[in-house]
Image 1 (cartoon, protein in one colour):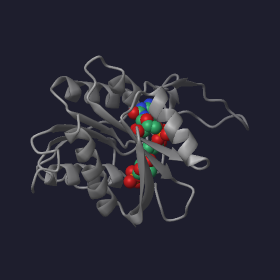
Image 2 (tube, rainbow, N blue to C red):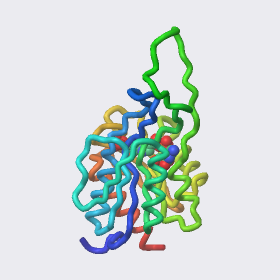
Image 3 (cartoon, helix red, strand yellow):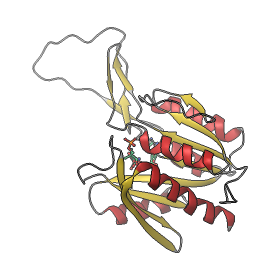
Image 4 (cartoon, rainbow, N blue to C red):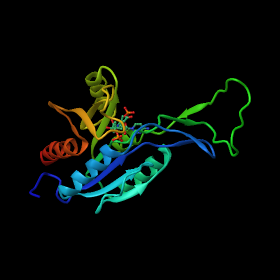
Length: 220
Ligand code: PMT
């Protein structure tokens, strides 16, 4: 596969949604299918990298040759990703759609229906991407930003705030793109450049992203 800058590199990728339990039968989640993250794991594997995929609950087959570690909640995801980075990591890519909040308490019994309205207190979840990017031994870190408006502005702001080397801005307002579809369209930003990829399949977008990341890594 030639040297695309990723041969022999250790890569950790997060993918899919998280689920935050409300009671034994209910949870808060989102429409992420994991397809984007799995496509990136395959593209990185094909470029010769050793890949750990920290995956929320999805209906996708584990790609051959990829070390898939299943998680459910945002807190699980942070633990599994931190462990994988501790084991050695040159590149970290966060494609997961992590729930920003979880129910303050998970009820031990199924919540019964009673009054017309009810309130569910929520508490902030830990941010895996910001935690990994903030480590003193941080790997080359790439984030995603799913936005519905002013995509470039929010993405660049996130890149700076979270101390990222690259950010992939995903406009999830267009129908048929983004969450839970086979296609996507993104704009990648790094210090000194940007490139728009797609609309195209997540597979082709993933291989171009891996090429771009490889070029940046090579220049390190
Ligand atoms: O899974 P698919 O159906 O293929 O859809 C792909 C996708 C649309 C989910 C994906 O391309 C995407 O855009 N992922 C980021 C989704 C998101 O919700 O982004 P965010 O703006 O909330 O978070 C920004 C970044 O921080 C992301 O890299 C996210 O993984 C990371 N993050 C956020 C919160 C948190 N608690 N921990 C994190 O690691």
